[in-house]
Amino acid sequence: MSVKRRDDGRWLADVQPIRGQRFRKLFDTKGEALRYETFILANKAKDSGWNPKASDRRKLSELVTLWYDLHGHMLKDGLRRKTRLDAMCVRLRNPVAAKLDASVYAHDRRIRSENGTSPKTLNNELGYLRAVFNELRGLGQIDYANPLELVKPFRIDERELSWLTDDQVTILLDSIRKHSDNPHVEPITLLCLATGARWSEAEGLIPARLRNGSVTYSKTKSSRVRTVPIDPALETFIREHWKRHGPFTGSISSFRRALVRSGIQLPKGQASHALRHTFASHFIQKGGNILTLQKILGHSSLAMTMRYSHLAPEHLAEAVRLSPLAGHILRSH
Image 1 (cartoon, one colour):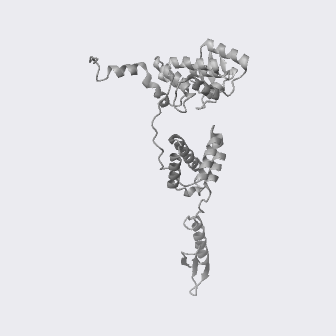
Image 2 (cartoon, rainbow, N blue to C red):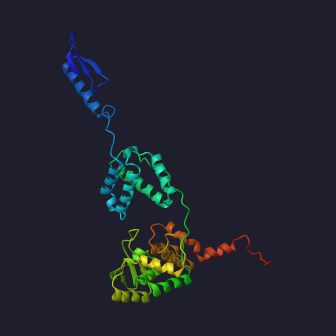
Image 3 (cartoon, rainbow, N blue to C red):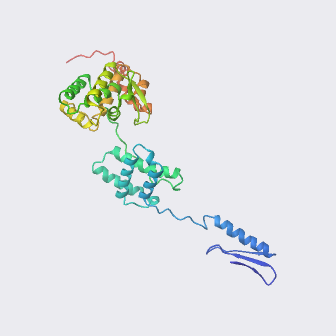
């Protein structure tokens, strides 16, 4: 690679930036030849074809750690997600992230499904892993497409929401009052039934958030603060309870034992959440407004609240009025 003068007095620029293609051109002056040499070298230095970028060899676990450092630590469940993601890295044998094979992931998911892992859990894990690639790409840490972008989640049948009848509420409260080994179970249960709160929200209530006949829940699942009015008698009951027993403590295990003693059968995983469903179901059945219910429950979207809409009185009345048997006399045999 040089600029040389030929016997005929002209100047030859012979440029070969890297092994392969050469650039040769004749010029009348040495200055022109040198400028051409500089031009070729400068432009080819910018050409990705001549300067291929080193492939990203970072392991999947490295990306998970990077995701947590840059984004995951800000999430409420960030540490729990990272634990799940770390376990996935181990099961997938911690491949180079850029070369993660969607079929390998799908095979691992199938094995997990056959071993009893629920479709919802598997869908959550897929979402967590996708989010790692999406977030890091958005932050400019990776420049390749999400390798799991086209993997489809499992289709999950909508689960029936369990709720308690008035008689079952009475039975449950009797079981708690007569046999509970934890004094906090009753007031927390009453709060859930009266305000539609999640168990953790009611359990975390402090005196400063109970005032003027209303309860304020903060640090909720949707990260929104919401205030729900309650009966003055319930406010008095809770304040007197705090004077006698102090702040609420972890009581969910005691609640589950009381539920078992009551004999009430609920679907798996809906023990304490049934109290929230009970509030919502009774609210709608008694003519409550669906938009008001959304605000009380703290749902981020109305679609979540609409699960209870089929319990509205007018909805149930239409089922009778608009059925094909409407107007026909049914005879007993």
